[in-house]
Structure formats: C-alpha cells, structure tokens
Length: 288
Image 1: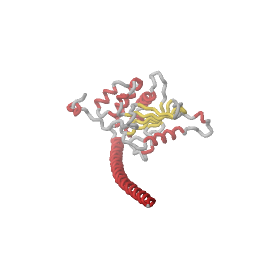
Image 2 (image 1 turned 90 degrees about the vertical axis):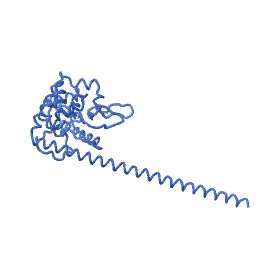
Image 3 (image 1 turned 120 degrees about the vertical axis):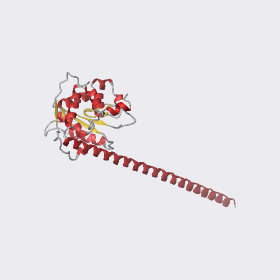
Image 4 (image 1 turned 180 degrees about the horizontal axis):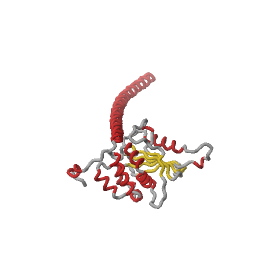
C-alpha cells in the first residue's frame, strides 16, 4: 500500500488511457497493442490466429467533430466479426441506448443482395468508469438477445459487453488468465511508475505504454487530449447539476403530495361527519 510520501514521488501520466482521444491515438498507432487488447477482450489464447483491421482511423492531432456519436475504435477481427471498443468515463444516462445504436449500426453489415445468414456478428464493448447496474456489480458482463422465460439465446451474433473499470476485484479467474483485469488497471493508472510495472506483465500492454510515451510529446495530440478532458469535466458538472435539480423536484413533489394527502384526509373526515349527521337526521325524521 502506498503511503502519502511515496504517492508524492510518483511521476504522473500527462493523460490516462481513459482519455478517449489518447485511447484512440495509442491503439491506432500501435497495432500490436490493439491486437493485445482484442485478444484479452475476446479471451483468445496465444495459439489463436487473429487479424485486426481498424475501420475508423482518425487523423492524429486533428480535432474530432461530433464525437458524441463516433465510436472510439471500430475493428474487424479475421474479416469475420465486428468489434466495437468504447471508452466512457462520465456517467451517461443514455449509454445503454447509445451502445444498442452503435451495435445495430455495425450489425447492419450485409451487402446488397447478400443472404441474411451472411451477416457478421458484432460485439460492442464499453469500458465504463461507473456502475451501470449498481444493484448487480460485475467486472466483465455480457448481454445477449434471450428469451425472457427460459433464457434460450435468440442469437449470439449481437452482443454487448461492459468492463467496469472500478471493479477489477470482481474479475474471474478467466478474466485474469487473459489479462482483462490487467488492462483495466492500466487504463485507470495515473503514474508512469505504476503503468510500467503493469506493462512488465504483458508485452501488448508494454507496446501501449510505449505509444503513450511517444504521443504525449506531440503538442497537437496533447491539445486534443486536453479538449476531451475539458469536455468530460463540463459534462460531469452538467450531470451533477441535473441530479441536484431532479433531487429538488422530487423533494417538492414529496412535500406537495404529503400536503395534499393531509388536505384530502381532512376533507374525507368532513364528508364522513356530514354523512353521519345526515344519517342521524334521516333516522330522527323517520321516528317522528
């Protein structure tokens, strides 16, 4: 465990791999690192042959327009599978809908006239810095189209996975075997010393760290990384403000509901009293 003194001696990374611009830049410029990440996510052994083709390269150092609906990394594995990799740090209330939209766009991959059986499978992987379902925390979760009664899989060609960067302690032995938890820790690491220590355990991660070292010296890339940091900062501010406003409205609704419930309760009592008086008068009238 690091003490405050040792923490102060660590050399900070200029930007972590959770910065989605650096994430794109590193894995685009270092094909070996991208291969290693894909192998880890797909749980492929060293003996498995893999060909990784990047479908959406960016012009390094150039600003990305309309980032809100552009995949970080869209790759094809062995010319037979689409794999989407998306880094998501701030809490996006619509991430589930976004991930489905991304996956659907990739799944619509048939050429005109081709049979539906030729459609290529799609796996969308989101690296999230928050709990998507707090009541069911997991490190690596996968969602498929299944029957709601007997859990029969409808299709395994359409798959969405989530890697929770905050729960590496929940990684399974299989996750550890394929170093998925190692990549997750590396993404969150804030110092050169720590990420270099992790890189000693994995040749592909070592290649990614080399990419960080080179790209971090490029002023244009640093500017774009900072632009993404600023964007995410203001998104968090907006999200926190939105949450505070929702909490305020919920409190007001609760107070008004309580007030009107009391008012209605009082009216109910008045009506009951009137009914009782009316019944008594009717009874008295009948007696006379």
